[in-house]
Structures are given as structure tokens and as C-alpha cells.
Image 1 (cartoon, rainbow, N blue to C red):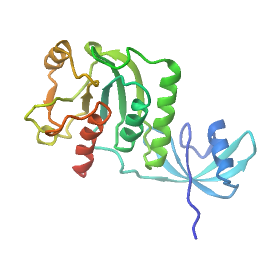
Image 2: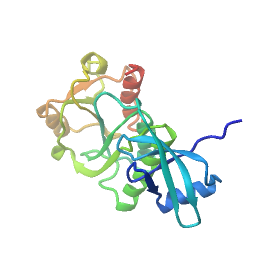
Image 3: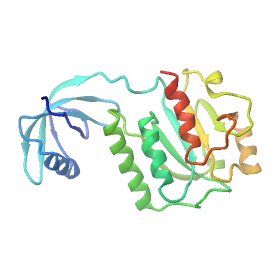
Image 4: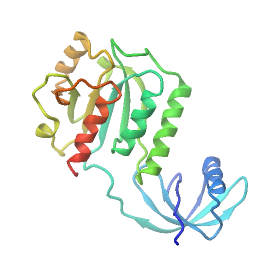
Length: 232
């Protein structure tokens, strides 16, 4: 039976590559040995296959064997801008959102957000979760996770949609893949009148998530699920 081929992240694809301490530990735990092949990716879209040429408790080196074309990304980058959530809800959204193709997460401070801000440790953990989810889902892109900004200071390019109960518009009826896409999802208490005013001024299109009221951690995944179901 063929052995499972592990994936590791490298700084950049090159003829010879060194691994970070975290990736060295991962290979040791998974009992990968010199001479084995692994999948490599740089987190920015490049991927390939490499041979492990050296491994000790502190270092590992790889020799690039080939580059591979990847087709797991959307035609345009997708940004998920999401209001801050408490507990592990953000972690769950980042993990699933990465699997569903998000290229960039923007955390938002809104009037009714569950928490006003998050610390550096939480942000670091979210970035680690995104990298792990990218490996698991065979993506060659690791999503960026940007520090929280007030909704009124958020700027985006291309198409802009936000989840809003009662809207008659459906995301896939308005979406094109001619420019970048940004999806905005609010907090548990919804968007405040001030938030809705800013969204309207920014040209954001409200879209429905169906007749049911979804929790704040479910709504963004419903938006992303619509994209995934489109088969693009």
C-alpha cells in the first residue's frame, strides 16, 4: 500500500529548501525519512513535490523534484470580512472558511460585536489554524488574517456583498468572477443602523441566506457554501 504523502510549507520553491522548526517536528512525528517524497507549497499559490534529503532533530532539507499546477482556487480572490465573535467561534469560521476557499480574512469591529477586540496571541492562533486547514484541504494558498478594523474603516475592491435577513437578492444571481469578491458577515446581534448606513454608502449588496435566522458563526459559512456549490 502506498504511503500517504505529507504536505509541508516552505518559504519559497527552490532547488534546495530548508524547513522551519515546526515543519521539522511535523516530519519527525509523522516518521518521514530521508528519501521519502513530500508535497511542498509556499502559501502563495506555488506547489510541487520534493525529496527529503536530510532530517535531524533540528533541521531538514528538501530537493525539489517538480512543480505542480494547482486548480483549487477561485478565479478571483475571495475575502471574508467577519465581525468579531467570542470563544472559539472565530477559529471555527477560519478553519472552515479556509477549506471553502477564502484567500483573505478581515476581522471587523462592529457596534454589536460579541467582543471589542482580540489580542496578538489569538490572532497568531487563527493564522496557525488557517495554515493547518490549508494543508488539510490541499490548497497552495494560506489565507491572510488581518487585524481587526472598525467597519467604517474597511476598504475593499471589486464586488461587495453582505448577509442580511429579509433581502430578496441571492448571491449567485449577482455574482460575477470578473473582479475580486468580498463577503461581509455581521455579529450575533446583527448590523446596527450605523453599520447598515455605511454598507449602503460603500455600495454593498445585501443578500439573503434563506428564510431561517442563522447564528453569527453559521452565516459566513452559508455564504461560502453557496460559492462552493456553484462548482467554480
